[in-house]
Length: 332
Image 1 (spheres, helix red, strand yellow):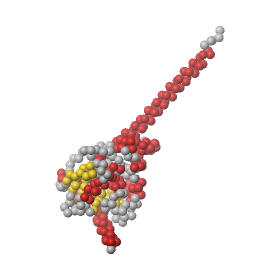
Image 2: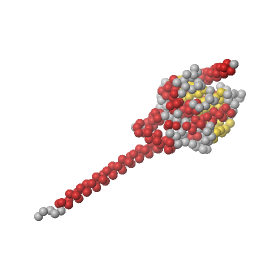
Image 3: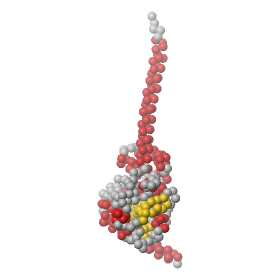
Image 4: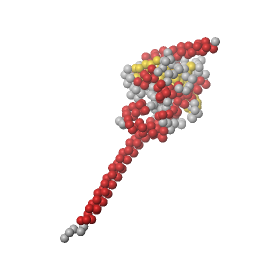
């Protein structure tokens, strides 16, 4: 007797196979999108951490650390976006001022440099000193870190403050991202007479990826593209808003001393070499130190460090005197 159920078995088996395929495809897609979500979330977390560095509280002050009399001061950022807190260390009768520009993840003390020692040294050379906290290091009104976009306005506020205090010569002494911020500020101010830049870090795609790779081995693409999309969302600043291309091609009108170590793992030293090569000011200089590390040049080579800084500051005096003589001659 023929099997009457046989004609119906084929469509039943086909329907089951189709359903199984749909389930498998759905599972695979779910797994795929889960990993995509995790991959993007990881980049989001990295972007958030970079925008919100953990900064230690102030542990001392110039009087306790070095016996330097100081004033607690506040001043506005150049764009009026916030008030800045800092210290002003006067040198009696001095009209020269050094403004310290600290690095990422630090405050005005930046103990590993160490900043108090350099502030004391600057004061011994009869410079007034301004030390202040960038917004991301503030304890009263913490802000996000933006790689120099906001910070350059805050530095310009410190420069204006020094000028209001009577400074006729202003030198910015920057470290790491504080040095990169100084270069951004230098694009728009005429109130700076010189810069000393230690371990210059300039936030751009290459250095961003270089630092990410130090901690986690992510592929360059699409990691950079994802980070570039996430930064404006998480801290309001896109990499394209940081003028790194302009900085890397700028010939600054004032003398600049670049100091950098060849074993700098955060800011590769060829960046400093490239920046230095663009400078035509006869008093600009560079010191590339074999086997030195990020922001540790002073600790590793204290005598040579201070010798070069002292010589550079002496040349700044010559440059300023030369500029004044030319101005007088032109006026005649």
